[in-house]
Structures are given as C-alpha cells and as structure tokens.
Image (tube, rainbow, N blue to C red):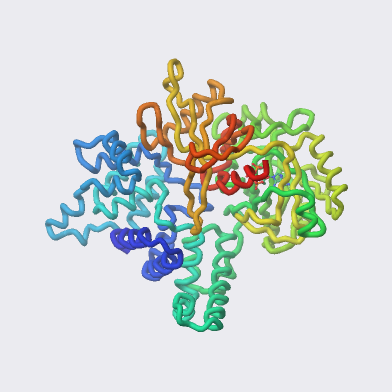
Length: 585
Ligand SMILES: Nc1ncnc2c1ncn2[C@@H]1O[C@H](COP(=O)(O)OP(=O)(O)OP(=O)(O)O)[C@@H](O)[C@H]1O
C-alpha cells in the first residue's frame, strides 16, 4: 500500500467520531491492505513493533523536531519547529504545515507516483532507525528521518510525525482494532449490515450481534496470548477462526500481566465464597520465561526485557526449572536477615543496564512466583488459579521460598489474622484471588483484589515541569502531574491534577532532569510541556475537588515518592481511580 493511501485513510478515520463508524473504516482499511496488513494493523496504533517486542524507536521529540527542521529547509531550525508546536499544539499539524517539497518537486517532473513512499518502506526505514546504536547513531537516525520527511506530502508528513513519536491520535484504541479485525475477516456482510441498519428485526439483529461477539472473542483470545495485532490480523484473514484457536503462548514472548483492583476480604467472600489469600510482595512484577534450550528471559509488567538486570533470578531459574515454563511473580529486595526491603530498593536494581555486578552486592533480590501460565507444553491460562498454583509448586518445590504461600479460606477472621501476620513480617498487604478464575492477561478485573491498609499513593504521569531558580536553574524542579483518562475506544488522554516539588533530593533533581529533558515538547519561559511517558508515585494528604486543574481535582500536600520505572503512561493511574479514592476519603 502507498503511504499516501494509508495517510488518507487515517485522516478519514480521525475525522470520524462515532465508534462503530471508526471500526467499519478500520475494517475496510484492513481488507484493502494486502501484504501490508500486519504493518497497517500496528501503524494505526502508532506502533512499528508488536507490543511484546521491547524494541523501541527511541526517538524523542527533540530528534523528531530536528529532522522536521532539516526537511523543511535551511532557514528552519528546531526552535522554529517548537514555536509552531506551541501554536498548533500537535506535532502532526506542525509537520503538515511545512512544505517538504520532495514529492511535489518530483511530481512537477511527472515522477510523483513512482517515487511515492510505501507503507513497507516507512516500516523498514523506521526499523533501521530503531536498530541504530552506538556512536554516531543519533546522526544516522536524524538522516533517515530527514530522508523520510523529505519525501512526504503534507498529509503523509502529518501521520509520519505522529508515528515517529508513537502517537497516532486518530481515536483508535486497542478495542477498535480488535473489533475491526473481526469485522473485516470473520463477520459476514449480512451480519454487519444487520447490526448497522435500523430497519432490521430485533431477532435477526440479536443473532448477528451474537455471531459478531463470538468472532471478537476469538480475536481477543489470540491477542491476549500473543500481544501482536499485526500477526493476529494476518492469521484472522488467512486462516480464520481455526487459525486463531491455534495461536498459543510462546515461551520467550511476554504476555500482558493480569492486574488487580482494590478490595477487601468481605468483597472477596461475598463474591466467591472462598478466597485464595497471598502476601502482596512490595517489589516489581516480573514474568519469567524458561525455554526448551534452557535460556531464561525476564520481562517487566510493561513487557520490557529486564533479564540483564537480575542475574540471581536467571541463575535461580536455570538451576531449579528443567522444562519450558512461563511464570508470573514479583522480584523483591531483601536485607541480610531475609527481611523485605522497601520498593525503592528494588528499583535500584530493576532495568539497570550498568554496574549490575556491583549493585548485586548492595541489594539482594529474590523471586516470589505466584502464577504459572505455561509448563512443559501446556498452556494454563484457562485453568483455575488453584491448578496453576499447584503446577507452580511442583516446578519450584512445595516449600520453596520462591513460591507464594496460599491460604484458601472462607472465614473473614482467619483472613484478618493472616493479613496481620503478613503486615508484621514487613509486607505491604495481601492479595485476594478468586480460586477458580482463569488468568486473564491485561485485565484489571474483579478476580484479583489487592488490599493495602496504608494510605494509597497515586502513580501519575508527568506532563509538564518548571525550571528551578538560582543554583537550581539548570534543573527541572516542579513537576506537573496528570491522571490518565481512557476514552471508549481505549486510547489515552491526560488531565492535570497537581504539581509536586516536595520530597525530591538534589541528586534526584539531576536524575529527573536527565530523564525528562529529552521528552520536552515545548518551552515557554520557565515552563515546559513534557511528552507523557514518565510516571511518578506520589503521596498526598487528601484529594480535593478543585477548578485549578483540568481533572477537576487537586492533591493536598503532594510529595514525590519515586519514579515508577516499571510503569508507562499507559499503565498510570486513571482519573476514575482518583475519583474512587476521593469518594472513599
Ligand atoms: N501475590 C501476588 N499476586 C499478584 N500480584 C502481586 C502479588 N504480590 C505482589 N503483587 C504485585 O501487586 C500488583 C497488583 O496490583 P496492581 O495490579 O494494582 O498493580 P500496581 O498498579 O503496580 O499496584 P501497586 O502500585 O499497588 O503495586 C501486581 O502487579 C504485582 O506487581
């Protein structure tokens, strides 16, 4: 597919606000994508790589602005691009506003169609940008991006710029892509019409809806186990439902983590009669993959590869496990007496790329596994929790410290006593799980409840900051925080909720400035806008209703606790959670 065709279709989708119409347009785009289907299914979500792949383009706004400036001509600087961004508010509009000329220049010589960019070319050029590393890679990336922008017409430039910064902003969330894959290849035109049109009798419409929902469920299951919209789209088209049924977990390819809601023992017992109760370890989520040839890989809850940072866990798994497995658990930091250390300590180890050996001496980490998704050829996602946990115990050893203890109980007093013991031992709370529930990847459903008696903190996205004053003028000092708002299609927006400047040491100011500076999108005086990517854990005294911030809420006495390096903007706390916490104060 030509990239200008992709851009035109993306523009059409962007201008449509009704969810059903968006799904229909996406479905039509997928049907017309031919060999580019997998790439197109990723591009519409602003992705070049599948979600399980931890490769990133690693292009910050500054690099993108520089590439746009170069393509725009010798008189244009990155600062001009940033000025336009301040006016137009969005990088796609900025890129579209320049006259890159490449294509049109060629078109003037009657050559436009031949040199048009294709989706395949954009994909492979962006992949080469991602692969550039080492000295000189910055310049290589710039040149490649500049080369791409130079060949775009204005509409293509709009979507290329957004793709480069991984934000398509066309109102397409994961749910819409899932539904569109089903609609494109599994739902018959008659059923699609019966659902869409008003003049169809209700029985026919209900039957059509049921068939469509079944098709969506098949696509959803394959997506849950593979995390690859591109591959699933191609399998759906080429092999239909039977092909989707064959999509299996693959050892070495991370799965989205199942998540928890806040809840109490009373909630759990009311709902399920009996609850499986475990310690809530205060560490970082880790998914352990051990493949046929004995290789171990570890992934964070964002499916980022953290194998290199945690050699003790790798060694432990290599020594203990003999068959291919996928395990879910937490890595915790321990002191010399085996007492749990606070969460901040594990963050000093997690995702570390340098000095791993030295840090290993300073902070000891251990695995606490609590689930088993795959063992020796068997996918266990649909098995009940108790069966998965039994499998885990038989793999790691019944009495191993590396396996979470489970108390199965229908007695609130017994659970309260268990919770008191867990808190006495220095842990942060308990998990209550439905013992018969399957493992649902990516789902923050009602089958796992977390209970932390201490005051909650919020994990908020940094969307702005202010340069300090005096001796702190070179550092960002005050940080604007936002809560995530998921729209119906599943794409994210951010609403501000407060500023934090307290609780940050001088050393941390340096680190936070290093972390956030490449993400700056715009500057005006001391204030900067930052691309939503860094997540702060923030404590507070109270959540108040307030017109000061766009969320309608403000935090009283916010204090910085840590950077949630294990979270991204997409997994930060939602405004809905803020509302719930505010209501429960
Ligand atoms: N026994 C356990 N079972 C499941 N999750 C556990 C367990 N012990 C610790 N955890 C951690 O608790 C988290 C569940 O809470 P939640 O899904 O809300 O994640 P979170 O947003 O990181 O929450 P928090 O900030 O409270 O850790 C899991 O992601 C996991 O990292």
